[in-house]
Amino acid sequence: MVDERRTHTDYKFVIRDLTLFYGEKRILNSLDLSVRRNEILGIIGPANSGKSTFLRTLNRMIDLTPLVRAEGEALLDGVNVLGNVDVHFLRRRVGIVFALPLPLPLSIFDNVAYGPRRHRSVQRGELPDLVERSLQAAFLWDEVKDRLHEPAMNLSGGQQQRLCIARTLAVQPEVILFDEPCSGLDPISTARVEDAMRVLKEQYTLILVTNLVAQASRVSDRTAFFLSGDLVEVDETEQMFRKPSDQRTDDYIAGRFG
Amino acid sequence: MTSRSKEKIAFAILTLTTILVTMPVILIVATIVKQGIGAINIEFLTTFPRNGMREGGIYPAIFGTLCLVAGAVVFAVPLGVGAAIYLNEYAGENLLTRLIRLAIINLAGVPSVVYGLFGMGLFVIFLNFGASILAGSLTLAVMNLPVIITASKEALSAVPQPFREVSLSLGASRWQTVRHIVLPNAVPGILTGIILEVSRAAGETAPILFTVAAFYLPGLPSSVFNQVMALPMHLFAISTQIPNISLETRYGTALVLLGLVFLVNSFAIVMRAILRRRRKW
Image (cartoon, rainbow over all chains, first blue to last red):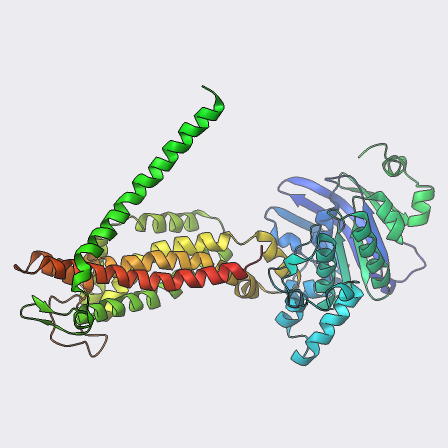
């Protein structure tokens, strides 16, 4: 499904023959998938189809889960992230937003400043500016600008999730992984997060794993359908939702299973 | 019988058990305060014993106990918290770490007199510190380690795992995660362990008997290689070794020991309360 007219530099991530194991069990079978620069790639599929683990492979968060093992290649700008790379640096380049909003037990400001402070990536004096820009990009600034030093746990669920996006942006990554970012949010908060994603793709490459088929159709440029460890198909979102090439995709999108 | 009346009976029994376990504590404290309060005055707290310890104050014993508690905390807290961090945050789950954990739990149950003998063998004789504040503090520290390690480890593992994942996902190293996220949130729990152990370090007689405590000294120690008097040892001495000491002096000494522990602990408890209020999760 890789478009032949494109050169390798059009792709941020090139995944080749990726197989994931949980213990002895295969949870992802020999997957080939490429992610274009500045696109939103949506990944849909029923529970246990391996999509979240796939996402966590791309910035090596799977290292934290015992028993999970990856084989194959995931090339980020041509470098295999599954090889011997500095994982801390990798995670600065490939940020992640988790399913549940998880503010650190710190103030709003300190949450956003957490990454830059650890990496000393900006001068101390530039930190407030970076925090403001990150919060603005996550569409949260106006709601919190007067209470940056309040505990982040006081925010509502939707605000907390946008805070998590701002916190990831402050690290200045190149790719942002979204792992079902709206699963705990109401429709209005979900719409805000989706608005943020549409703007973010101008600057970043986004991969969005979602349980909401409609969400993929709303925000993603291309959509991939995972089913029990297999990539069934990947295509332009419009094409996929109009006329999927595989019957199973059609069934899933139409809500006939999963 | 209706579930309502069953509930009432259960509630009454539970209340009774609570009263029963509280009673001895109240009785002990009340007796000591009642019998000892008469002995407490400035002279008692600030002067040396006189006339074969039958008169005068207990200042050197108070001073000695403070030295020993401070020494024990200085040695035991960094060592214990460090070991807890290693065990909880770095060490994997294997036979060796399981054995270490088992050993630590068992060490907490070793009688204090065994620690005293161990301290004498290692610090006083083998390392040649002599009977000294250093040897006594180290012995108390060793005795305190298991509880401090266990309590600290509990406190560390009570910090929710997702906080660690978030920190690591932002590119922080493991140590940065421990230093900035895990440890600050575990401090209240760690303090609980320290509070428990301060009382033990102040009150135990056996570990200091062979390693530091003097029956009587005419002056204060000039270095950590000197012996000191200590409150529990002094209390033991005046209660069993010297005849014709007024009951009031004995209870007064016990009251000072109690008060000292209470003072040190309330400091730690206030600190813990402040830290807990600041915590938001």
